[in-house]
Length: 154
Image (cartoon, rainbow, N blue to C red; front, side, top):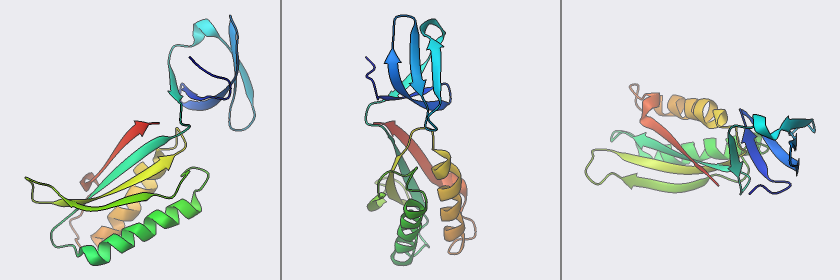
């Protein structure tokens, strides 16, 4: 069930439910624009009960990369992104530390971001590219496929 003031994604846009009637639903976007939609025209709605999505970023660290230098540098990028984009990144990033893969030959640093729905490009493009450029200083062969991003709706 949808509640008034709840946040949802209709199509590719984020909306707030203003009212739901028998025939029409009234939505308001982030710019205050009001739209009236016939209920029969609504096919797919993604609801964000917690008002956000979580982005989990796993940054694979090659063995030759010094974690004592790299980890603080990546944390600095996280803090900078948060300070610059507080309207999109809703809380300070949570850093889980470096973990070894049990049966693999690599290790990774996991970071969790709390994002405004529909704003994943800030992670997929900006953050990811900044980290790749940072790690290329230590390992010229570092590639963007070594950073995995997964999402969870909250």
